[in-house]
Image 1 (cartoon, rainbow, N blue to C red):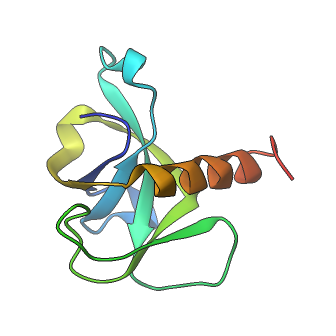
Image 2 (tube, rainbow, N blue to C red):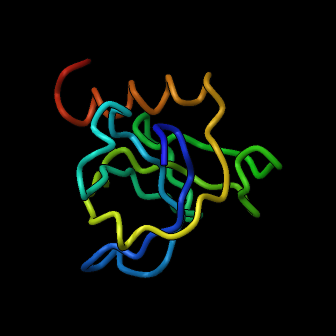
Image 3 (spheres, one colour):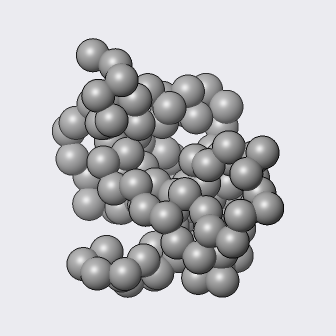
Length: 107
């Protein structure tokens, strides 16, 4: 699992149904037994911190989806399913900006 990979996961709580998520954790932390992800949804919203990804062979998505940078979760690696695709580099920059905005590190 590497930063930018799109994986499947079933997080706890209200967001617990199996869904795609993007790995946002630094690759240098790969030895940890957990991983930091941004959950994804196909329920589209108009918000700066929701990053839209199109379905493609690269992303592995079947429909237009959004990375919810406002839904950052840490889960045990054992709860992460298969890798279905990868976020294009130019979209990963948008995800990084969304995370910075949500955490208050950017305007």
